[in-house]
Image 1 (spheres, rainbow, N blue to C red):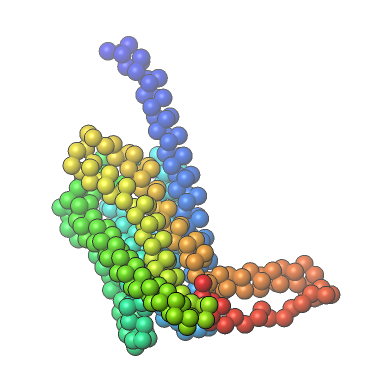
Image 2 (cartoon, rainbow, N blue to C red):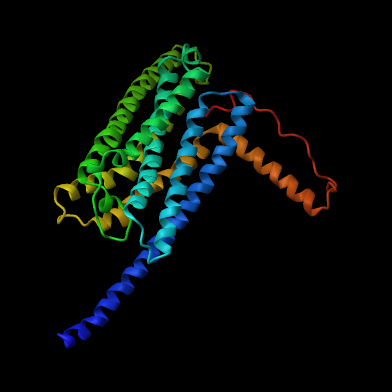
Length: 346
């Protein structure tokens, strides 16, 4: 027995070393991903906040909330990265439940924010003449408060319902170690699948409306009344439809593999290893929180204009600081030219 124990020691040491290396590598990936998510979303949130203060546009409040929700995802993931990098880390059951509840709540808030953005775009196309009467400040605030309350309920459901908790002696805080499959299935039914079906419905309906507008434009051009330039309404509709389509595609590609693999793992634990879900597919889902600000900085002209003005302001301050507070000769410090509403449209 002693010989067998001594003989198994190198193999156990190798396994422990491989596990520590894998944990460190996962922690490093999570730290880099979380840092990028936080930086991108905080920058977009600052830009949107400045633009909202200048223009008073309420429609960008939903986009701002999306950036804040994704930034919160980055902060919660950074906590998981610290846990992975500080192994061995022996957390209590209650700590793991609260940690994963915050992660789930922030992800749910990001998904619900995407729904609000899609609904806002759909309402702007479906009811263009009544949009500003329907989208008022109190209604926007009520929608945002309801969004965060629902996200908190979904994320902290295992805290309020102990039967959703799984007693585990495993050191790692993860979904499959501390949550029962019934909670995972409830989260899928209440969160992901309704969001995906609603996205598809909104996109198909906007595609239908946009096709009618394009057909109308073609009829006007054939009659010789178009003037060679598409109407601003049709351009805005196509822009909104394109934005929602890209968001739907990125959301589906990011989260669908994780949810499908999780359902398969719950039905047949031996068929699909949960480590693949947590170490690879979950990272793909978290990447959606990094794609959202990048997409909005690319598609939204308002965000592009504000980013360029912010970058120009920072550049001027850096040049003034390097010049000891003296303006460089020949530098034109005039304000950027005003941009009309028609130029802000694609």
